[in-house]
Length: 95
Image (cartoon, rainbow, N blue to C red; front, side, top):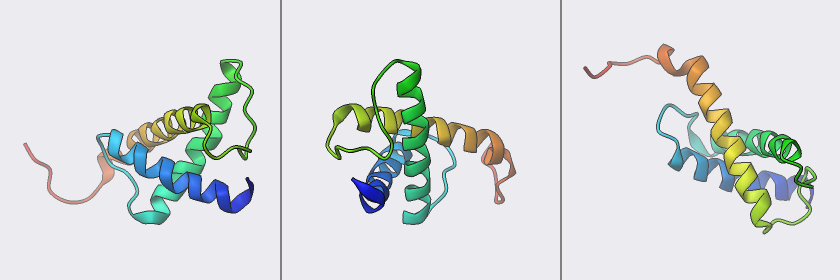
């Protein structure tokens, strides 16, 4: 699929994960792409843990297994991001 396809997949995955995740997330299309591509890497690692045979970059853009593991990986990335940055964001907090 190549680098361009991986970046496009990353944008889609990042947007999906940001909609599913309740909490702080890096903004914009660049933030979504970064979260999605990192999520694809983490998802590929999770797939190998569960004995799935996935390669990164993915060779099949429309493979449901790749999308599921990539979204799960992106959710893990957002969770770690929240742990690291969640309490240090500026602005008023609601009580």
